[in-house]
Length: 360
Image (cartoon, rainbow, N blue to C red; front, side, top):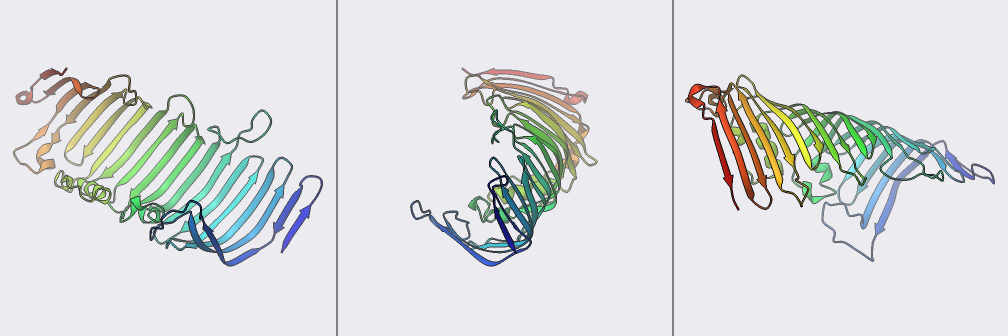
């Protein structure tokens, strides 16, 4: 049943329905003025031919003189397009009132992916006249749990992912903040094609503003083997054959660290732990990468703590070493200056080497 009310006072117009059921709805949209070539298996927004089945438990829309209210509960929505993409069992509750939009319990399945979003919230700011504005001060909040996002699903919308078998299992992702200051509270994931596991967090400040952008990332853990990393790289670059799987073969590796600073001057510390083989760490300072008026500079410090190169490289003639190395490189179009030093805690490897090179 559908009820429609039109009044002279607020709300000016309202429509509500107890239950909605639509079967095999057919939607066709074609751009004859600016057509684009149809690629088989690729969604084309200028040549759409889609069908849908919808079941909704309730629907209410109120249109006021300066705002509106909306509440919809969709219990099942199936969509299929002529390109071959099909999404099924879509469920969600959506509401909007006084500049607050909320989507609760969104779920979606297709042949490759599974999406579960407990909530998504957006808060619109007002201008001096009381109207809502869409700018970098929009406040967002969302959480994704127990989901799988596959490249094969994305391949229906861009051919960049065609033939890519990677898929990320999102165990938990939480994002909050303003568009101009987004915070990734947590992102716990597993890449399913390789088995690489990660737990990261971070923030990005300055999006959509005239000021400089700042980034921060914390890698709490990134666990992998060189074989897994080699497999992942080949999915993205099929012709790549860098032989990573032959280094530290079968050894469990774990990367931890942090990166922060303005985009034009990022600093970071990374540590790599190899099971039963010691560890290595790196500290870096990258300057003026985005500044075309200044010379670029990279300062790097490397160290190892009883890193067993013999086990990692499969060479019995090598042992465990503790090394220290530093480099300072200045360049613009070409390398102009290099300062480097290498030292070791082992007497026979104590090189204390320093070089200085300058090219005009």
